[in-house]
Length: 203
Image (cartoon, rainbow, N blue to C red; front, side, top):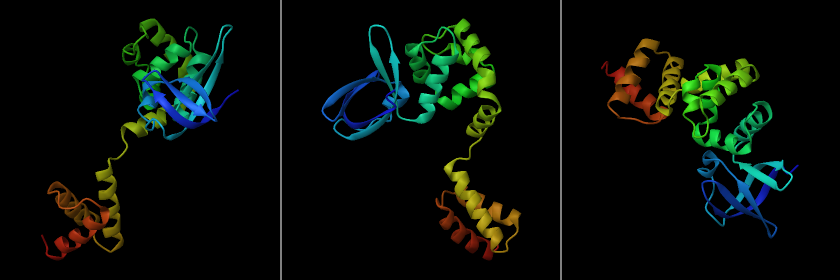
């Protein structure tokens, strides 16, 4: 089994890439999600692979993240009627997190919008994968949906720093929120410095 290729990207299209490994050119079929992450041609690349052996050919499928390859294998190995080509279409049409969320929530409508996946195939995906994705995927999908934005993360850091300095939570929140609304600071450090001045001035 070929598990990854370490080499140089020769060329790439949204459907496949050519990787030069020690003077041997490997054609690797890829989803759009991996195409978006490829380096410029001529640059070094490590791409994770899955080798599919058929009677008439040995085909390599490539992925830029372990999550993409895991989902590809999950589809090919566990859902009847889904081969490598359709599994790539699924990865091209939906992010891994959104796919897991759709399966966990039995969202057949969202899945059937993927090119090549009709309603019956979408129903089969939900039926055959729901238990396998399980609670971990439900938690992961929920956390992805509610993940804080970079601005919220900076605000949370600033508020915690102000509380540690002895300020009341309500005052810290108000000062930081006001500063962010006015766009006066970006980083947590800047927010803390300006908030201290603001609170000291009683504004």
